[in-house]
Image (cartoon, rainbow, N blue to C red; front, side, top):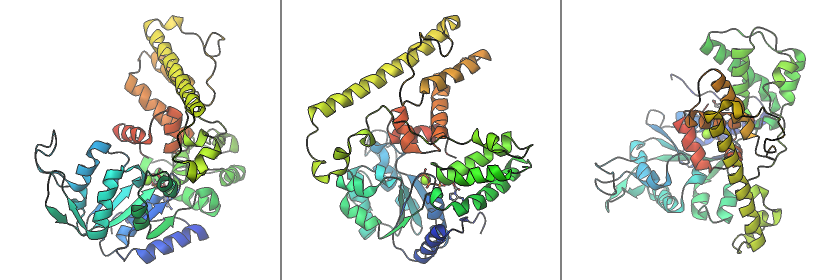
Length: 401
Ligand SMILES: Nc1ncnc2c1ncn2[C@@H]1O[C@H](COP(=O)(O)OP(=O)(O)OP(=O)(O)O)[C@@H](O)[C@H]1O
Ligand SMILES: [Mg+2]
């Protein structure tokens, strides 16, 4: 088969996952792929489809997190003409397009509860209704779902239906992070070197022994995706010499120690995160107050950032050099987005090209993703936007991989 999916790895962890994938592939059972960002969930979904009896039928991957909630149901199940403003004709949904084949519901944890009910029904009976129709349709679709959230936490917090969760995880395939299977690092690196040499028509000299060891020790918060990005950067930018640990270190991220200043579940006291019985309790006023203060700080920070940029547009000479004491203090834990954007702005303006807001946004997202090894949840947290907005913007700017 052309472009057959190959899963690289020889560690016992990945070999076990491949064996399980091969075992379930020929059946129609639903599979839930879990694991951190960049561990290969999408690769496994495609692999399972290709090894199934549905291989010659459609494989329809959908990122539930990237589709606006308001149109997700009609995207999945289709709609009738006039069923909502803008529905100018009848439209088939992804489930119908996938009939006979496999649907891959990526970021399933981002699906709103009302759509979850309909997913459960189609999973159990193969039946659904188009939006605006009372007629029941039937499809024969195998469902593979993926998430980098802990769905059991989502169930506990009532954001994910328990029945759907159990239905989806008939078989759960947990993909191990790269740092738990270090024996795969060099194999993967070699594959990516070959791929990118070919793609860019370049030759790569290689790594010194010390650099290889540094690569083997690295934490890879962004997993295989981060390794792939590192290799591509090295091939494009550093191909002429053997890569030393010094050169390599320019492309590795320090272990993140900062905490984003935005209030998120991970910044709340553990008590409020882990006690199920407290999940439903009213949030105490002091917590609300702290959350508001956090938000206020973020808004102030954004305002400062924008004012700085506007000042620069109207009068470049007024802009103070970085490090000047008159500048607002560096924000704690905001990843210095302001500095990142300022540097970008100065470079572009220096070249006589004032960047547009879109370019600044695109840059802020690319840079923050890079700094967090492609981890979308962390990036969204740092940028103070929801994961859904981030997915939408990644799509919009075509930033994925
Ligand atoms: N075992 C593997 N062999 C070869 N390539 C891999 C493997 N695992 C991951 N990759 C590559 O790493 C990158 C990230 O993988 P993938 O998109 O499947 O991750 P993911 O788990 O879906 O991440 P996210 O949660 O961020 O969507 C892709 O370019 C993929 O091709
Ligand atoms: Mg994915």
